[in-house]
Image (cartoon, rainbow, N blue to C red; front, side, top):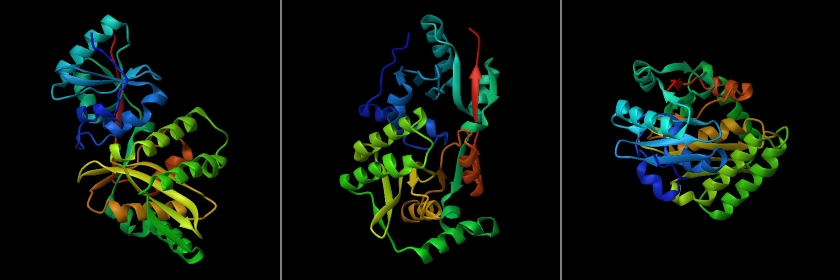
Length: 288
C-alpha cells in the first residue's frame, strides 16, 4: 500500500520543473502553499508521484511516465485502504486515457485554468482590450505612484498586512476560502526564496495599493499565485497585471492565472482579458 505523508520543502525535487500539463495543481508550489489548508498528502513509488486532497477526499492525476501502470497501483491502494477512486483536476489528454481504462470522466469548467500570452497582457492590443488600456491611462492621470520589487521581508510583511486588512475589508466576511488563501499567502511570504517566487508592489502617494506574487516555471509558462489590490483606486488591477508581466514575464509564452472557481465576478474579470488557452480539467471516477 502507498505511504502518504505531508509534503515539506525537501520534496520540491519530486515535482516537475517544466510545464508538462500547464495545469496549476501539478507544480510543487501549489502543493506547498495549500497542503495545510486542504490537507494535501503525497506518496512516491518507483512508478509515480501521487497526491491526495483530504478536504475533497480525492486524488490528483499521478505524475508519471506510465499512466496505466500508475493507475493500476493507485487502484490497488484504494482497494486496500478503503479510499474512493476519485480524481479531480485531470488534464484533458490524460482524461481520455483514463476513459479508455474504464473511468467515467466529467468536465468541470469552474476548475479550468485561464492562460494568456505574456505579449497580450503586456501590450493589451486591439479593440477587445481597449477598456484595459483606458483603465491604465486613467490611473496614470489621476495618481502619483511607484513600483517596487517584493525584495525584502519587510515589504512582504506589509503586503500580508494589507491583504488581511484592506483587501479583507472589501469582502463579505472571513470565509473558510479567504482564511485558507491568507494562510497560503503567509506561507508564500515565509518561504519566498525556497519557493523561487517573485513579485511587485504598487504604492500611491507612498501608500501600499496592490501587490502580485508569481512564479516562472520555464520559458513556456509562469503562474500568478496571488494578486491583491485596494479597489478604491480605479484601474489598479489592470495596472498591476500589466506591470508585473512587463517587468518579469516578457520572455515567457503563457501566464497561468488559475481558475475562476465559479465565482461570477472572477469569471467575468478573467474572461475580459480574452484567454488564449483554457486548460480543461476533468473529474474521473471508477468503481472498484
